[in-house]
Image 1: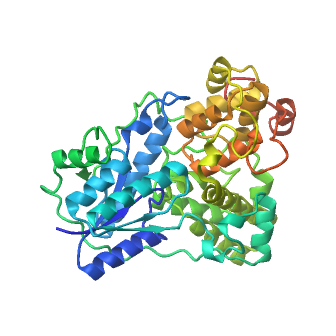
Image 2: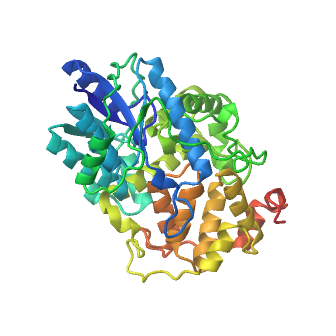
Image 3: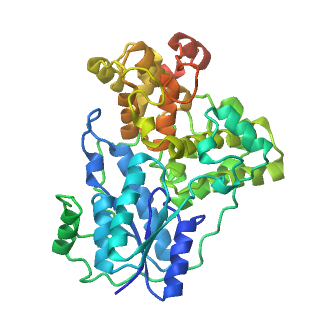
Length: 463
């Protein structure tokens, strides 16, 4: 038996997915089935140095919904999703061996762990005689269109933006969904757990947990209802149909956002603290790849063509460019962005575990900070303004290690994106590319400017 594998990573969509299209084209050309897969590693839900769960219940629920939605989209195209339970670097080589796959196509991701997973899968594929094809598709700008090489990437965002705009670089045009996909292979009796485990152990992995995958089954146990009881205060109530996970949910949100002319008011309202409309709310779908950055900016440009451009609609381009810059910084610097000193020469930061715990639990005594942290714990969401404030408070007022805060955001935010998360925490800590030495947000001033009547503090019981 033989097939072509498409490995879904942070691209959980069927439209505007060059890697999926290339995999389908190769499968058709070779006359073999196409097997779409993704990998869920249960270790993601375990404790790390900093946090009790690397992926908390809100993120798990959002991912589970995204995978279920992706499977439904694939079924509509005559395919299915195979979800592997285990570390990608162990499970993908075992699957390549079991299927005698001739090729694997996947999105290229620059963060260190994701890049290392890809290298390990590629090494195994070469031993098995299969080829890996990595597709850069997570940005709205094509690398070859940039007016500089990655090694010459401007360190400062403003310089990056100016060079991109002065060169007239345009976002790539998003691709439509395929009309159909090649069929999946017959997986009955395909997977030999003992052989898979032996393969994984041969690659240096001691245990796969449960090595048998299930076609079309998402092996994520739903978080307990008591943990995820819907909270009416949430600014991203993803338990409601209007905020559904997956590609259709993303497209529906994008359509209603532009239909209601909300891009025009984005710049004026983006620093709001509560509500569903003060910001674009694109980020949860961007984080899983149910929405691509190219699709988002194309919708904004279509909106401007019909309704006119404005400071608000242009600011959405500005925010998406920040996302691009953070990803390109990961291409340029890689693991250096994850060191205690970041890109600076500063010593390892101090850390107060008790202060960190009080911050996580929203009991620092700083009312607006505590309101934000309680909101994050209850809903998996936090406004950008409050993200900056609580990060600043942890680093500059509580004298804690910025990496602990970054890990807490990774655990709790449903829109966690490793590139933007790392970039923003380094920015606040003064250990990234900005030479101005970090950002301290004065809690009193932030309260006066953004919660003068105490509405957000009262909402979360800290007024």
